[in-house]
Image (cartoon, rainbow, N blue to C red; front, side, top):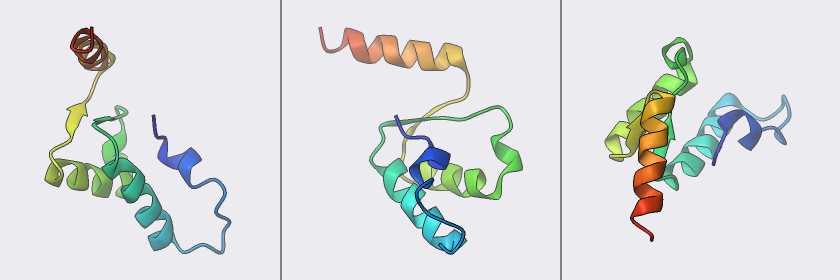
Length: 79
């Protein structure tokens, strides 16, 4: 599980925004799926992450029901 805000929390205000974005994008590229909060479109960074996730063909989850289904599917495929 990766949360972009906690992923960059060690970076202080002197760290350029672009560097924080690169750090977050690198972490998201290692994920199999991405869960989007309802208001993700209101964030410039989240919109960029969304575009990158689409380009990388990540599984996109937009609701808890989708997330539960995906997790259930993944757990079922390992048993």
